[in-house]
Structures are given as structure tokens and as C-alpha cells.
Image (cartoon, rainbow, N blue to C red):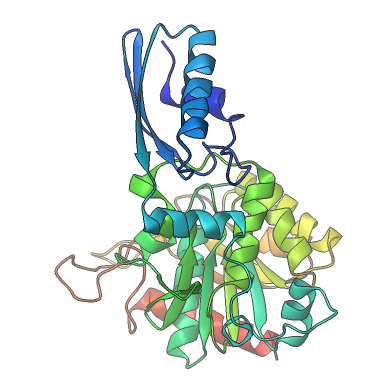
Length: 367
């Protein structure tokens, strides 16, 4: 029997007639249920023409039957206005928002993203890692909060489009507001946040190809009312794939921070992300060694759970500085607190002070 992911892959080539984009990429195929030899799903329709709707339904039915599915039940429904607005953002139909609401730096005759990085006055900082699981996003959200506590105007883009986690890590429950086609980021801990997670229903997986991802990322830069910023942090996906490459191309003079753990293998893999930054002429601000040690709450003794020296060796390899060594742990936050978040350390805690010291070092490097 086919899995949900296999069904989405089978239906990926079917395009919506009004936009020319894949139904799966636009998330117009919903509520897939698999039971023995029967598949049921919902097809969200943008087109009101009954003939084209029936053609689309038949195309879905034909592809599934060609794959060996005997019984296919398809429910048709019209897209809501909210869904149409989200799809317009994904497909670029919402472009042309007011000039003053975009990031500073747009000017006629020059490439949008070249202007953003070179003349906007914003410090663009991409946070990268060679592999997942090293705490890259934890470092990003706490660095952003630390910069905000220091009085800087900070924005944060969750550019890890496949593995978005920033809204959950920061305890953000509401989504961005859209007024007259302009997207307003959500603000939390003094940081303006934009994430793919705001536009995905029920934590569904993102099944998009590279061009669609690049288009969404481009809209995060150009179609969001960021206002005046001093720093815009980007939480990159791990590794050196399409999204990381898109960011390097869109922001040719952004700076970069590499996150690793003390383990030798993690540092070895992280060196690839650093090498990519160097090969694309991006300045590496430094290395952050996360999960450097565990502090015993009873005696205060440090235990080096993942070994020692990985961050320092990586910094030496990349000819840069070791910005901080962050201990293994989690914030002592309580769900009942009004400022609860699973991953942001409160001001005044030992780990928060480490991030603030790192923020100060970065601010000096960006002067």
C-alpha cells in the first residue's frame, strides 16, 4: 500500500490550471487517508470553472489508478480567501507591495538583493552548520534575543524551510498579519520573526522543489514590512544545499557564523559549511561551539559529554575566532509564565549572559 509521501510524489506533476504550479507544492491536496486498497483526499480548487475542476479531479484519479490504487475518493472544495492569499504569496502574485514597507535599499536599476546587502545599512548574518542536531537554531534565537536586549533592532528569518522550528522555539503562537498585501512579521522578545512555519498547516511537511523554495525565501526579503533593522539573522538549513546556496547568491556580502559541537566529527562536517562561505566570498564572523559541557546542578562540576576542542579546531581551520562555548542544557522556563518559550534563555541567567557577550563581540566585528 502506498504511503502518504508516495501519494504526494505521484501527484506532484499535476499543475493547478490558474497558477501553473504543482497542486502538491501549493498544498492543494489535503487530508490524505489510506485504508487498505482505498485512498481518500481533499482537492482544494482555485478555479471556479466547473469543467476545469472536473479535469483536475480526473487527472488526480488517473494518476493514482495508474499507480495501482483501485478505489479513489476525492472531495472538492473551494479555496478560502485566506488560502488564496497564502497561495498568492507563494506564487509571487502578491508582488508589488508598497516600496516603503520593504527592507531599505530598493532602488531602480539595481538588483533587489544586491541593494539589500550592500547599501541598506543592515548587517545580514547567516547562521550555518554542517549537519543537523548541533543546536544551530537554538544559537540563532538566543543570539537574536541577546542583540535585542542590547538595544539593537533585530529581524530573524527562519530560512530552514524544510525543518522550520523558530516559531515553536520562541513560543510564538500567532501568525503574521497581512494588510493590503503587506506581510507584517511577528515580534517576540524584541525580535521580528518570519518563518515558513507560519504558512504550513498542522505541521505538514514541505514538499517543494528548489525554485519554489527560492521564491518563498525571496519574498521573505522583499515583501515583508521589516521596518528599520540593525541586524537580520538567517537560520540556514544544515549542510550546503539549494537554500543555503540561494542565500549566498541573494546576499553576496552577508556574514556568517558556523555552529558545531565539540565532537571531532561534527567539527569536521561543519568545516564544509565554512568552506562554502569562503568559496562564495562571505566573511565568517566566527565559530560557536554548542553543547560544550554539562554543568552539574548539584556541585557545579563541568562534564565534557561530547569531548573537547572541536570548536577551537574548526575556528583554527577556518582562520576565524571561537565566539562562544555554550553549555548543554535547556532554559528553566515554565509553561504558565507569560514569556514562556522552549528555547530562549531568560535575561540574567548564566547562559543568557554568554549569548550577550557573544552579541557584543559580533557587534564589534560588524562595525
